[in-house]
View 1 (cartoon, each protein chain N blue to C red):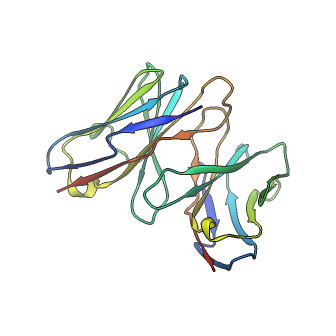
View 2: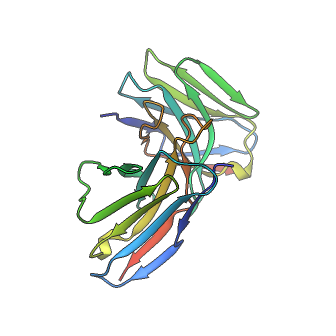
View 3: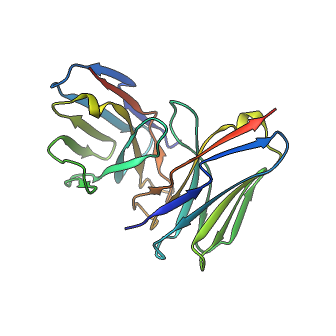
Length: 117
Length: 112
C-alpha cells in the first residue's frame, strides 16, 4: 500500500512552453502533498507544500507564478512549470502524506525528469 | 527554519565493514527523523526512521541513534554489501504532515 505515481516520467520541451506534472496517491487519500526539485548530485529541495482544497505554501525563493500547484482532490496534485527555461531542467519529485494509519511517513513518487531545450 | 547538516559527503567502505553517517539539526522542536536511500534516477526510499521519544532503533543491518540533547542522529550500516552503494539522505521534520528538511546527502560506495 501507500503508492504514489507521477506522470510523465520524463518530458522534453522547448523554452517558453509550459509543462504539467501530475502526482497521484493511488491507494490512500493524501491530506498533504509536497513538491521537490533535485539537481544532479544535489539534495532534494522542497519547493512547496500543498493541502487539498487550499493554496500551496511556497518555500522562500520559489516563484509561485512560475510553478503553479493545484491540489484539487485528496489523490491528485499537479505542478505546472510555466514558461520553462533551460535552468528549470531538473528532477521533480512529489511526495504525499496524511493517509489513515500512515503516520509521519511521506511516500515519494518516482520523479519526473524535465529537460528544457 | 530547520537546517540539517550531513557528514561525510562521500564514504568508501570495504565490503563487510560498517558505515556511519551523521546528521545534525537545528530546530529542537523537530521530532521525526527519517533516512532515505536513493539510487541514480530513482525516488528516495525510506530505510529507517526514528521519533524523538526513542533513542535507538534497529532493523537488521541498519540502525539509527538519536541524541536529542545534542541534536544529532546517525545511521549505522553493518556488514555492508555492494548493493548498499547509493546516496543516503537524512531528514528532519516536526512530524505529522509537516515538511521534511533534507541533509545534503552522502554518497556511499562499498568496495568489493
